[in-house]
Amino acid sequence: MQSRAANLICDPSDKDVPVFADPHDIGNIVAHLRCGEPVKFLERVVSPPGFDRIQYADGKEGFVSNSYLESPIATPGEGVTAPSPIYKPEPGYTPEARQAGIEGKMTLAIVVDAQGNVTDVQETSEGLGGGLDKSAMDAVKTWRFTPATRNGVPVPVRVMVEVSFHL
Image 1 (tube, rainbow, N blue to C red):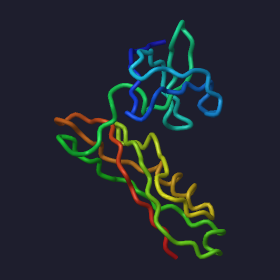
Image 2: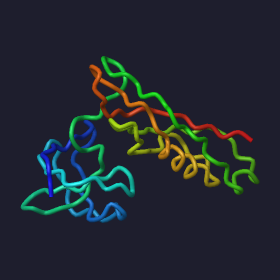
Image 3: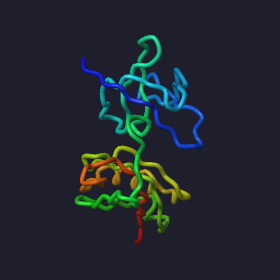
Image 4: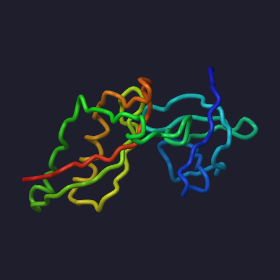
């Protein structure tokens, strides 16, 4: 199996990085690693999106969120172009939300990787309820972009997107 070296990258507010036993069970934390700690990147786990299998202390293995590996995730500006959407289907209304007459906007923080795929979606605004939160997040995970670039080279970026629901 091919592997490559990577360092754990954290936001200033993070004290450590959780390592999960299984990407499908993110409640099962098997280790907490220090920010900047070197690990070996083993493979990308496609489902659920946004997880990578790593090898850490004494050959142990686990899973970390993709946003914690490699180079820091950029933000548009200061030499980094913004990604441009090329496929952006609207999320569907749920019958429950339609019946309740729920309308509104949600703000999501997403990571667009260097290939233009959405690899991480986090809700940053108050949820709308009625299943619309899940519908929005599921739809955004299918969006595709022309990647952001720095000096002409594609780079992963974190951007904010807004999803609106109107009856």
